[in-house]
Length: 252
Image (tube, rainbow, N blue to C red; front, side, top):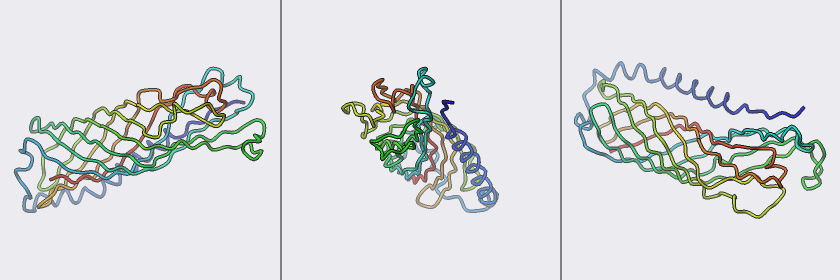
């Protein structure tokens, strides 16, 4: 029976729930004690704008939709997406809109985080040492431009939390969509557009604001450049990016 396994969604959201629970548990006593400490940078939230930097770890994969002809395929039995991790370095620019709302830009370079697919073939492939199980890795180096709105809670001592939501534009510098035809290729487009949502925790220190942040990112566009002549590509229809990101932000 022809199948396509898509376990990545369940894994990613499980990681998200566990991470949020752990962060909330660790921060609860710190939040309670912060109201008794001396306020650091009490006028920081009234600044019209401020800047910073970010370092992130991301867990990403491609969410696939099988092509209608997949069940008719006589060579590929299974095409299963896999996930991997990468790091990102970015800059921050935040604009104050009101006491509660801020607008933030966070351009960043995402290094690593290659996606891959695991294929099970009906017949051994001589091009891959006569094996029926093949892993196809899709390298990725992304320049990302996220734009987000933040909703801030009240500041309690030197602690505050916030929610964020926004959009992003990604450009994959390792895109192979213009590569020549080859039997072992799954071609990905260069550009992607998506939405993001997350939660963060501000800790105010005398000279810097330290912020751990967790967010999810879902691509809205189809990044698959399908080629009916390529056996590893023609069994797939849409491919959409999915990512969970944990970041450490330092703001002035």
